[in-house]
Image (tube, rainbow, N blue to C red; front, top):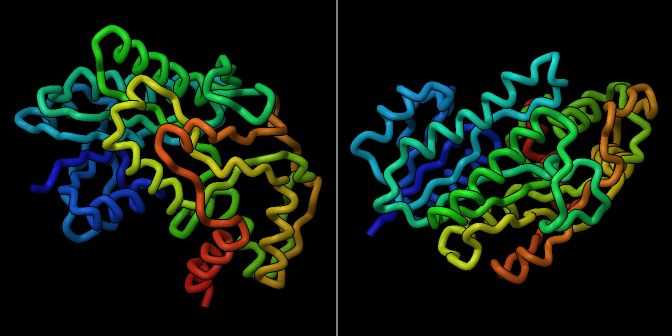
Length: 303
């Protein structure tokens, strides 16, 4: 018998890969999204703005799901007095509306997707038991969601796991994201501005992340837990840019022509021992293999 899974924010980069794989794993998949463009056959899509309580309430009326994965919200590093309030509202008010309206009778597991930005400037490798230190409204909103959901687990046995992702990459990511931007500029043989590239980051390929999310679905031992999903392998941004240039054979990165972000954490990579222990999960795709696959997927856009 097919189990029902709801993927909130399932039309984004991670959501599309996750929806496709969940369908292949014989789940009955429903996707909830504010914007619906390209659809995957066999998946039920519903257009809902989760910041609107009435829309969320209407959607959940007479509907129930065994599994819910929350990928909602957009990445935005604006300062509070620039656009911060809308960022916080997008994430935190959205999760409040979802939790208030969902049907708990059949719910087996609610998985919330968090962000490595919640760690702020904590020393690497970041481990789940350190105190979060958000340095942007986006990171604050994500942290607030994590704490709210953990509170629900502790006080009302809400079956939730928070998966904290680092830099997920792969085919299908939009060109305004870091790696697709670099790949595009190199394919076009352009000179392009980048920072000095001394930031240390953690890149994890999309298929590994999707595998980790789906492995969490049937794990009760993770209830109330925060778990890092990442490669656990530190690499400098400069090395990644130079690897893309080497694999494509063209491109002229202008290192140092862009300043680092104010307050940017210069070292952000994960300790993934908890995911390995609780989920028996570890990434399988190497950085070079993943970037090669990603490059090949983008080349068709420039023929």
